[in-house]
Each structure stands twice: as structure tokens, then as C-alpha cells.
Amino acid sequence: MINRKKCIDKMADRIPLIVNSNAKQIQELPTTDALLIHSGAGKGLEFTNNPGGGTGDVASITYEAVSGEQTNLKIAVANDGAPSAGPDNIELSTPNGASINITANTASTNSTSGALVVTGGVGIGKSVYIEKNLSVGQQLNLTGTSAAGDSDINLSGGSDGLAVVTNTSNSGKISFVTKNSGGTNSTIQLEHQKINFSGPNITGTAVTFSPTGAAPIYGVRAYGLITAKQSGSADTVYTADINGGNISGYRRLAKGAYRINFTHAMPHNNYVVLITPQFIDPGSSLSTQPEGVDVHVRSNSHQSVNFCRVTITESQSDSDAKDQSFHIAVIC
Image (tube, rainbow, N blue to C red; front, side, top):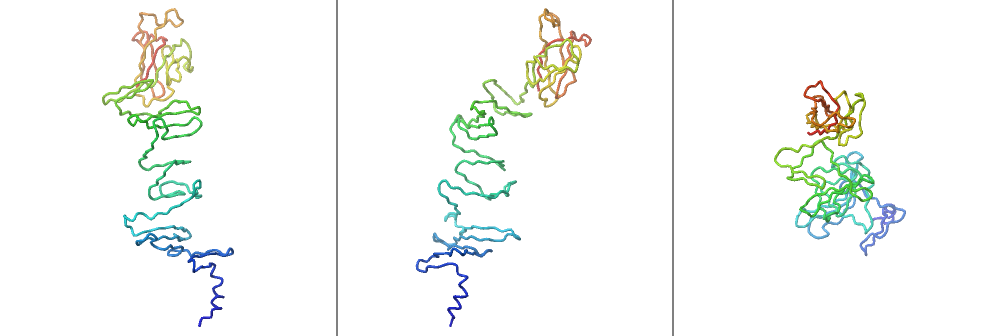
């Protein structure tokens, strides 16, 4: 015969729960006790199988060792794999206005590291704010339903750093627009050594390109009006009254010899320099180009990606150099 008193005394400190057999539920956990669940594979909390009928539907919460002291708290569901039955999901449900916070701060360096690692795809119904870098391993598809003129991509890097990419309703055209902090449009600048345009036509408000055939498009990389100086050393750099672009200044190396410095370097030194003399009224202080007198202006071999040199003579001989204002254009 079992000694009931000894059994109760032995188990009194090991039964922290009160079970109501009539209600078929655990009703109470004493406030001085804690619910202890054993860890390890095959232990933990296991729910009754197949709540929706059928077979093979199970769910559990276990605390398992991975390697050494590294552990995982695993919330798992599984089924028998029948496609027609649909997936068994894990849902984190909160009321409206609440959030689910992940406090881990592990940095992400690839698709298998970070505070949140997702093996499959991610579906997000609304906006995503990413505070730091976004790395996309393959194609990035934007399938927004923004109306023409709305912003599909916003890049904000400062008070004047808002860039907007808009997918307009006109034949799927893409528009690039930048706005400053006041909301007005500003300049879009494309800086690269080479930009390829494959479309048949490139048009704009300020300029129109009409490329045809297979040949590339070459552009004027620098231009301006160089005002002749009748004196000055080779160390004197003139920067005023250039009236052009991509020319930072020029030097008078000697009579009729000038060096033109570029603001931005050329991609290579195999470029073409075009020069046209400027006709000046014989009554001016630089009356070196009276009408009816030929002037020979040419570039020479002393050119680099940072500058080019120009020699001016009154004839084809190199012995009659003269100071003469001229227009210059560099093409490559």
C-alpha cells in the first residue's frame, strides 16, 4: 500500500501548478514560483498535433545547444508537406500602433549575417526605412503605383540633397529631378569619364543632340577667348576675361606663345585643339591684327591632359611671333 503522506511530502516542493481537472486547465502558478521548462532537443513546450485535422501538423518551442555554449531558442512548426494543405505559419501579432523590436545590433556584411537573417524572400506591404547601406545582390525591381510627378525613389543626404526619380505615365519614361530645401529644381550633374547613350535621340530644353549611325559622340571639352598680353612673365597666370569653360587660366610663355590650363583634366592627350584669331580694331592698344594681314595660330606637340600650348605667328615662319587674342576649343 502506498504511503500517501510520504508521497505528498516528497512531491510538495516539485508541483508549482494547480490543475483544475473539471475545467481541464492549469489555473494558477504561485507568485513565489517560476515555471521551469527543460531545455534540449525533444524537450521544451510541445503543442497538441493537428489542430485543424489531418496529420503531420506539429509545433514546439525548444531551447537547444548549437555548439559549446552557443544556443538557439527555436519556435518551430511543421506539417506533412502536402501542398494542398497550405503552409503552417508563425505569426507575430500585435494590436494597431504596436511594434515588434529586435534589439540585437549585429552588423550585416552579407546575406547570412546581421541582427535579422532571412533565408527566403521578404514581403513588405508598406514603406521601408533603412538607416545605413542597402546592398542588393541581384536585380532591384520597383513596382510602385506612384502617379506621374510623384516620387518613386527619394535620396536625402542633406538640406539640399534630395534626388527624385519619377516613373512618368508617358510610355514608361524615367525623369531625374533634384530639388533643394526650398523646393525648387536645381541642376542634375553627371560626372564620369564616359557616358554612353544608345537611344536614337537625346533632347533637352537647353541643347539637342541628334546622334546617328554607329560612331560615338565627341564633345567640346574646353573653350574660351584668350586675350593676348603684350608683357608678363611665364609665371604669371591670367584667369580673368576667359569667357569660356573648363579653362582655369593661361600663361604667356613668350611673345606669341601661350599655355592654356584646364580646370578638369582631359581623359587623354590625344585631343584636337581648334583656334580662330580674333580680329581687333587697329586703333586699339592691341592693334596687332589689322584687316588684311594673315595670322597663323596653331597648337603644338607640347600638350597633356592638364594643359595645351598655342603658338601665334604673323606668317608660316616661326620667326615672326606676335601676341594675338584668339578663340580656342578642345574636342575629344
